[in-house]
Each structure stands twice: as structure tokens, then as C-alpha cells.
Image (cartoon, rainbow, N blue to C red; front, side, top):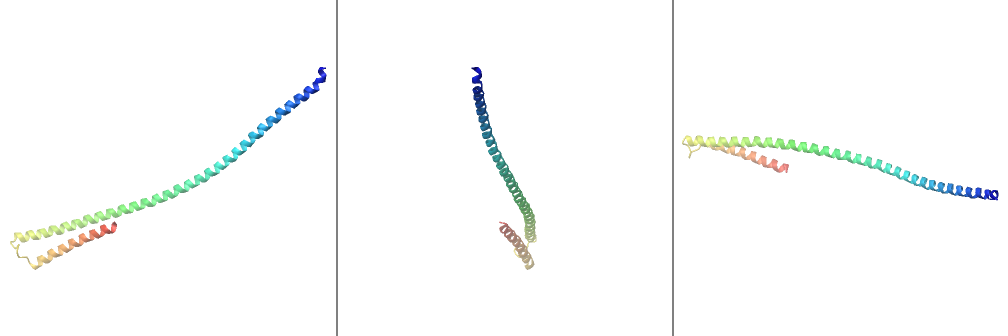
Length: 148
């Protein structure tokens, strides 16, 4: 009797083995599909990363160019400021010299006892010094207004 059941046992064992193989195959197919979708997603991420890197590099290059231009402007403006300060100092020295000359003329007149009577030449000379000083001051004001 045992031999009579043996073919059925083989059939049942074969059915179980077939079921297990089918189940294992389905799991592998599902896992393969997951891996394929993950692989596609990874490729998309790599492509977007490359695009992002390229756009970041371009933005960095543009920023560097902009900063270099701003640096040139800063250097140019510093040079202009230095030149204006030098010119301002020179004009201030000229104004001080003219003022000292006027004071020395006035002191000389006072010392000579000619305080009330001044010669026409002395008055003209004082007027010239005053005009030069006034011109220097006007020029400083114009330059300051022009730079603003």
C-alpha cells in the first residue's frame, strides 16, 4: 500500500516544490523591479546633480566676474579719493600761503606806520591774493560737488 501512495507523494512534493519556486520567482521579479526603478531614479538624480553642478559653477563664475569688476571700481575710487585729498592739501597750502602773505603785508604796513595809508600797489596785491584764495576755495567746492 505504501507503493500506491508513492506517486501521489511525488506529485504533492512536486506541487509544493513548484509552488515554492513560483513564489521565489515572484519575489525575485518584484525585487528586480524595485532595483530597476531605483536605478532609474539614481540616473535621474545623477543627471540633475550634473546640471546643478554646472549651474552652480556658472553662477560662481559670474559672481567672481562681478566681484572683480567691483574690486576694480573700488580701486579706481580709492585712487580718485587719494588724488582729491592730495589736491585738497595742495590747495589748502596755497590758501594758507596766500593768507600768510596777506598777514605779512598787513604787519609790514603796521610796522612801517602806514596803517591808514596804503599804496595802490599794495591794495591790488591784496586783491589778487584774495581772488586767488577765493578761486581755490571755489574749485574745491566744485570738485566736492562733482564727486558727490
